[in-house]
Length: 111
Image (spheres, rainbow, N blue to C red):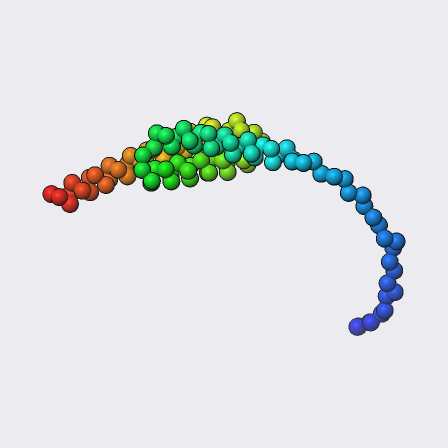
């Protein structure tokens, strides 16, 4: 049942498209830079309260996570401050808990 037929190739006239110049920066790109500025400003405020490299790393991670989550919404500039505040509070709590565990471990090792 194998039938090999040759089909003639037909080509249409070449189609050309006119390209319009793109704007200098799309709206989302402007919004991204504003989000980055907001993230850095709020992160700097929290870093002034922080002490220690571990807490600093936790806060930077919290800021990046909050920015990534906020970026998925329609209004990232409105959502980010609250998300970051929650994540920064959690970072401070985790750091305090870690310090408590370290201190308690030292006491148990001495005893």
